[in-house]
Length: 235
Image (cartoon, rainbow, N blue to C red):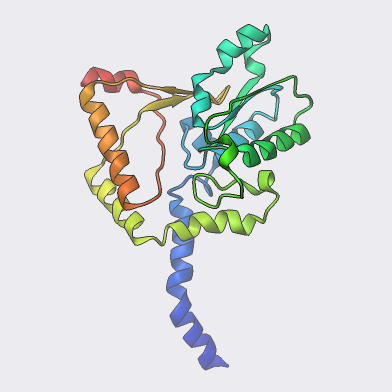
């Protein structure tokens, strides 16, 4: 029995240690302090971020814009003006390539956790009705509070992603090259995203960085830009 335990520890201690390390490392902003990620607008899975932001604000919202990232063509402030309601009561709940299935889960979740839903602006694009099953990719998998699936499945998805050698290599290169391209602002009151229009040089760096991530891995993390004006002044 003792021999078996020793062999088990020898074989699996490195794996267990790396799992613990990946949780502490938290490259996808899932396991760490939510308030820190919210205040800095850091996320990989947008629906997890929106859910956390809504919880952070105690669900004090009753007008919702729901859709994919393309829904950010519509802003809470302008929509609230058209409705004649307070802008502080509006919220943007979106997800990467969100389709009908996930949008329905979001509406059910909001209906259960908010006191009242006065208005919903559902943004439908050409991909909306093509979603036929529960997606499991990092950017699309829904938090268990929305999908009603196991927490183990959700969180293990992000842990297993850190075992991908291409992803690890990309992270190491970014660490040494210090490549960080802030290209949007996230309004933590409404959840709206405002994209920054930088000069051509910075746009090309951003484009090449994203293409590099997508080519070598399927993982892409997003960085908020709270001080974008200072960045522009340096260009």
